[in-house]
Image (cartoon, rainbow, N blue to C red):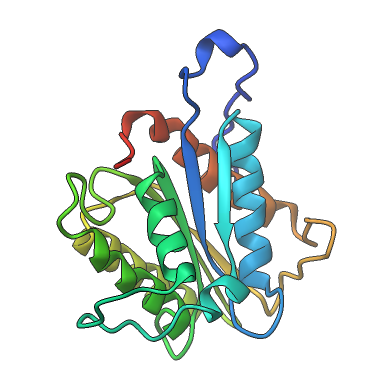
Length: 206
């Protein structure tokens, strides 16, 4: 299968004066996972287009308390996450497929975006959002991507046209930022390039 190729942005005069920030959200609790490694590859592709990135991996999300909509104060980790998304022009979300849907730790982080409900740009409004799903088998990848798309729509975001579905039964990632299947790397890079293409169209909330 052949995927679309984009040119890497090189000339400084083709970039916005203030480079957009793309925030990556994804991973699992208990160490660096295939999901987190996949997200890192996509964010690296964003950086090759000349933009900045910030990543919230499994360890970061594990520090977020279970979202309480009635809480009157937020922890430093919660505030940092919300402020990062407020300042982003685009987001990439990567989730493992757990029993046919996204993981609880990823959903908990996304629930925290309710803190932006009264912002001039609430939630993920008008933001391009890249999607990545990993699962031990193909079945959960499709349903997880479908769930992610539904959540992004509910948060008023724009899922990018291509979403990467990765079967970790056959695809193995390494510690050097690679994988045993070049086609998977190409898919993840395409997610990053599409997000970078649309990021300049979105205005950060702060």
